[in-house]
Length: 339
Image 1 (cartoon, one colour):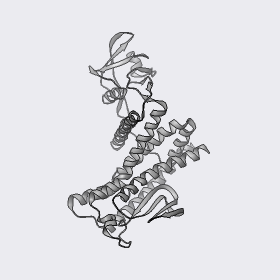
Image 2: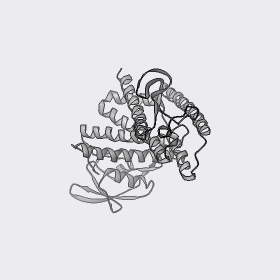
Image 3: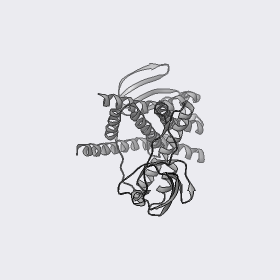
Image 4: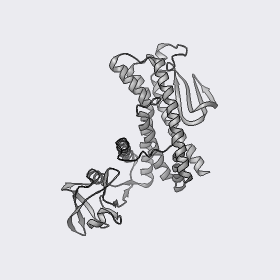
């Protein structure tokens, strides 16, 4: 029961915030919005307020906001209310508002986590040295504070990880403080999925923070996670990492596991998923926001809009292929969970 409730809340929140971004910016631009929908397929329920229908649909794999001017077959409305007659920059703002809303949601969720349990402090103190790792062989110990890598000063764990990750198989000299002494310890990072690892974990330290500091931390952490997603995608494309992409079934399983651990882990996961939704929608994939932004960029450069019917067909075919991909990934996830 907890898992079902958590899945509904997390999925619903991610979809609602994404579509709300499109909706609010479209309204701000004066565009007529016919429908704000959660889900696809047959309508289950809904209500009408003003000129907009707010609906819940049967297939909970996303949502949509239907503007005047998006479908060339619909009746004409006054140009000032029509999406297609708005300047390119306004249309780009409407389309990009959905992914941006997901990134903002991640920042807010992470800020809430930091306010509730404290924010991690910048530290380079080793809490654990993994058995059999390069760090163990080099002689690192719990409590060592790493202050430099090859003479370059480091003040945060992320900075340390970045320097080590970039040098797999190369000897590094890490300067550490240990019981009042300063030591230089040579170590060769082991390559794992294309990056260097020496097998150490940081000492957890947190501090209580106010709303502004928490929001700043949420911003920083969101930027870091986005960078990690981009790096992993690049490694998948180049074959340096396996194409390990999870679908709805795996996401449901992860949400269920996080929910069993408590509210804070669930908020962490929701923030991570929101970043993924925002980033994925910015990719130039047919039927997603990224492809629409690509077409609008083309129109802005060439001053010639793409034929609306051709663009509609492109998105329709892309959406069908996207659903097929989701079905394949879902089948694979079910097969893996059943093993």
